[in-house]
Length: 108
Image 1: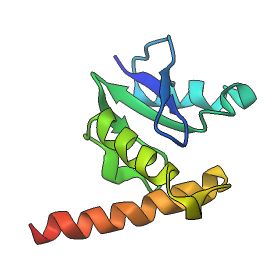
Image 2 (image 1 turned 90 degrees about the horizontal axis):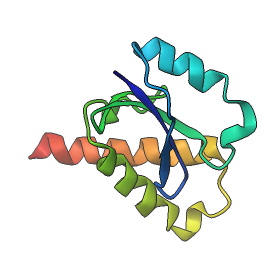
Image 3 (image 1 turned 90 degrees about the vertical axis):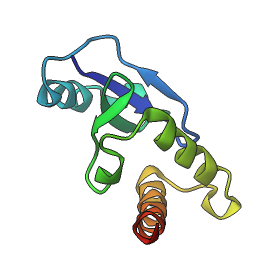
């Protein structure tokens, strides 16, 4: 069974109560949340605390633990240069961080 988590800029998240048979079912539910999750704009599909699907551009996090993305979001949210970023700008900063992490992992 899959679950939907909704994450804030600082990595805090809430888990939606329903469990879903498929990733598609979870995304459909996410798409119907509307403004309910204004403060938790980043949605991920999980199974057993592991990310199973992500929004476009964040596939790096698939099969990583929630704590990994939570840590990265938290670190980025504390950077003064990102203060006032909207969700799209923040995702771009996350994407840039992923590129750095990918290079580091590749060199090891």
